Length: 195
Image 1 (cartoon, rainbow, N blue to C red):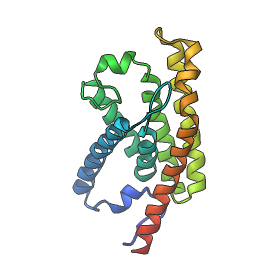
Image 2 (image 1 turned 120 degrees about the vertical axis):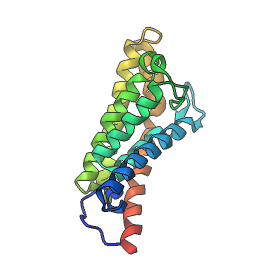
Image 3 (image 1 turned 90 degrees about the vertical axis):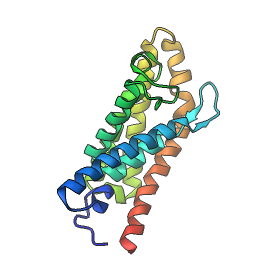
Image 4 (image 1 turned 90 degrees about the horizontal axis):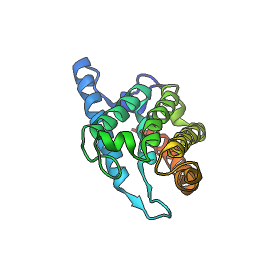
């Protein structure tokens, strides 16, 4: 398979060249990506005080494969699905859940983190696992920071629980997920280049 541009995201390299088919491909990739994130949110590793999910692994992997525009569009599709009531979030769905749950800060941060990793993929960094890991770490910090901030101002939790529930349980698992995601897409590029 001859790749047209070495710096384009992986998803762009494998889609058809015809504009209509490419547009349909983007829509299908965004839908498939949003469903993958929803499924990843249901994979819960028991942890105290809250379980750890695989959403950030899915988000960073998709963003590295999709590039910034398609990654952000995919996260927005995921958030829209949840806002209209589809049970795509870890504990359900609906506008009330989206606007008032303790996870809203994380959900908003997913857009920024996906855009950041996708931007790195647009620049060709998705072939370098070390560079991609660094970008994913920054995305992880953004996700944890916005999650912390939202929980800190949430009337049911507050500042005293924000770190203990919103950051502490996720630090090491999120670093591990950022590292795994940083290896998956460079490995996929390696496989494509062998064909």
